[in-house]
Image (cartoon, rainbow, N blue to C red):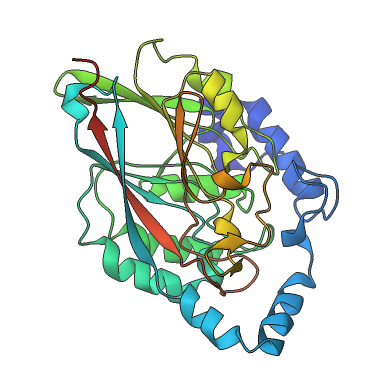
Length: 316
């Protein structure tokens, strides 16, 4: 029996999708081995936070790592496209991801204090609102609601591997349009671009990129929101121009120079953080504003990103 609060979502995306995700949540959400794209899901290992904390304290880096995790920086990323409609020249997207709100309280407090002054046209969130991959999510939703009060304009989002589909109605109720392999046109001065979003590809493997791209005209400018960059090749094959992702945290605990020790994703290291390109697809992997396992970061500060889209003059 599916909970009544999911009925509206079922009407929109279909009972099969909702039932499949609920089945995985019920049977596998805390699974350590074998579910998703990785053989070993370290985020589901209950001893992992203790081991990370012990290692940081033993090396004398714990205090520094805790302080780093609470200070969110604002990155600005300029992207140029030949097929961007003229009306969208200078179109700006605020990109938030991997908030892990209930275990990243200091970072969320700082984030709430800075986002209200930013200028942008739309805001996108690329998943992982909850700290753990399973368990209660009410505290995370409470903090997200505080953040939502500081955001303006249309807000779109997708779910990540830390998120339950049971969170979706509450997130949509506060004005976050979640996308489950769906597409929305964005119209400006009579011209249009398309924004698509897919359900988590990493753990739940619930993405359907072909479906998300099916309503986009072949020559239209299109953006894909995906929690993880692991779908980069399929996104390029589907003809998307830009993909915005998170998930990797840029490694979260990195060597000097931002070199990640581990990315928890099946991607080339060049796609683990920041801007990258694959064939005709331009991508950006944000390291996120929150943290997983523990609120600690080394050589990889938490971030939010303002992506400014510019029209190239190459097609004159």
